[in-house]
Image 1 (cartoon, rainbow, N blue to C red):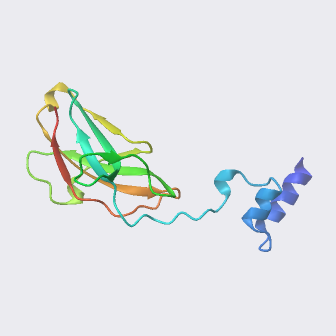
Image 2 (image 1 turned 90 degrees about the horizontal axis):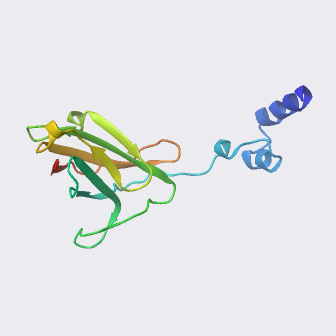
Image 3 (image 1 turned 180 degrees about the vertical axis):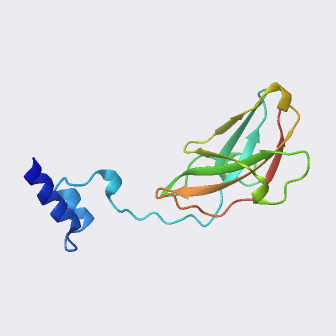
Length: 147
């Protein structure tokens, strides 16, 4: 076994052996394969559902015309969304004011709040994140009242 590990390390450090060659030899896990994952240049569309008390359910994906429904799904190569949010009594105009962060890989994103936070203004903005952790641009800052 030590000889095999030594030979595997020599192959992994060789400039003439590609990641696909290493994978074909069974020397790489699927996480180590370098697959292209371009950063998404658009932002996710979202609709916030406030039908449940103390919960804001944010559906994200691609909006249908008129933004009445969200088509679930991520652009190719995207792992999920980063949502930055904050509760604020005054209007939030900068992303720096969104002090909390959540990450989600499968729409919808659910944010839960306490009874004392009911009626507060929730501001949030979302962006795509690809499989390598690179992030796209944030969408507009949205506002919803916590039910």
